[in-house]
Length: 66
Image (cartoon, rainbow, N blue to C red; front, side, top):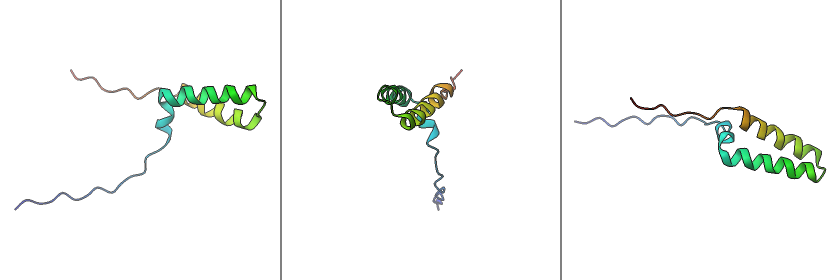
């Protein structure tokens, strides 16, 4: 008789790894520049912070097989 596997509980994933993608990096950078050019202070501060986090955090590298 085969046993059925128990289901693993779902864990919440953080949104922060999504900020490391190239689309997020360039997208937030462009949005920050647009907010700066249109004299919008708070949108610039928020998008510049998100862009800086995306650029400063290294991408997750996959392990290479030997």
